[in-house]
Length: 329
Picture 1 (cartoon, rainbow, N blue to C red):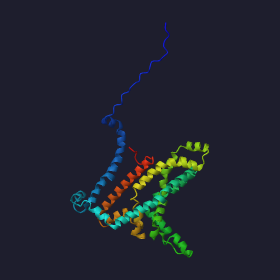
Picture 2 (picture 1 turned 135 degrees about the horizontal axis):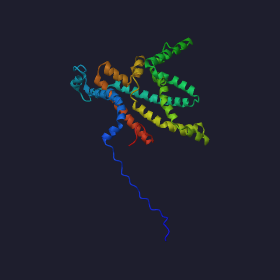
Picture 3 (picture 1 turned 90 degrees about the vertical axis):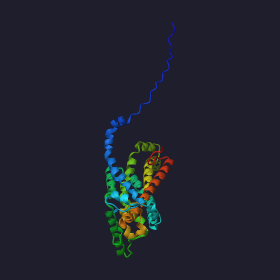
Picture 4 (picture 1 turned 180 degrees about the vertical axis):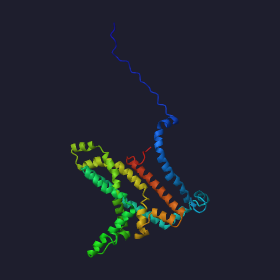
């Protein structure tokens, strides 16, 4: 009688057929609660963003709001002039001056304002006491809730011609400076206002990024003999880099949008040559002198340039190995 064979039979591979894709009706029945939750946000976007975007058509018209009995009739009865508003815009020196001021302010704030929330987050993250950290964080981002009217008024009381610094200088026998009306220091003035008002709020994003870094990485690096600077360079910065790149891309895309209220409130004090930016130019051209088409053309130009800057910056982020705003397909 022969001994039984000890060789195991080969396992027959089991082939699984690919899952059949769900039909649209099946996915709708499965995901209807999620879709229902998104309906209010979709309605808000449609009513306050996509529907008003149709008004950009007046950039190609000699728009007259009194041409009909309703806004729709005004759209239909206004004369189409093609790119006439853009031609007028590009031939106007005041427009290019506002573009130059806007880009100059953006470049200045990228250097002197953008790193401040990062530095605040790193300093606040180094505080060991949770109670002290919470107190400092609350104090630092509280000015974000102040209006620009209040912020400019506070700076006027401190730095204006009749402010605290000027009065102290006069009492000491020095010439009283007036930083609020000096065009030469306007970039420093608005950047310091932005830092005081919004830097604390901006650091919240970086604090969240720091909280997402695994503490075991720091402990392992310290056990291997890495000092504070090496842990910062090899752990903290790589953890913050995706967020920094993302916010930098968004800031570049928003390069032609430096704000309205802050510059409108101080435009007369320092002069139009220093404080005229694209937002105030659109306001005074579109509403001040009722050149609605020219104002719409300036706003459309600003949006197009912002879109191109976002796409270009995101492509550079992909080349550097970062995800950016959207993943590379």
